[in-house]
Length: 114
Figure 1 (cartoon, rainbow, N blue to C red):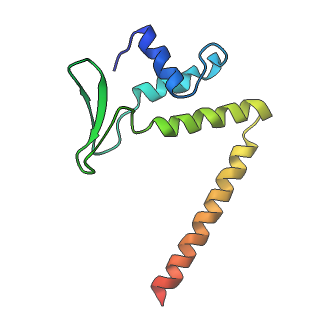
Figure 2 (spheres, rainbow, N blue to C red):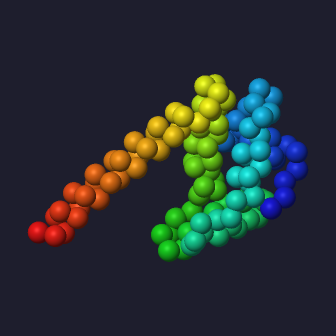
C-alpha cells in the first residue's frame, strides 16, 4: 500500500497518534499501514477511491483496517513505556492476562473432565 503525505497524516491521527506531539511513535502507524490483513479479509477500493475491508467468511465490511484497534493498543503501551521508563507495567499486565487465561482454561478443563 502507498499513501500520500496528507492521507498518511489522516491515518496516523485515526490511530489516536498526534504526529506533531508524538513523532517518536509514528513508526507504529507506519507498521499498521503496511500490516497484512488477517485471514479472510480483503481490501477493496470503491469508485470514489476510498478503501474498505471485507471479510467474506463473516460477511462484514469495515472502513477501517481490521487490525487498527490492535495498533491503537500498541501505541498506548508505547506511551506507557515512555512515561514510566520501562516495560515492567506491560510485563505485569501480560502476567495478569496469562494468569487469568490459565484460570479460565483450568475451569474449562475441570468441566470437560467431569
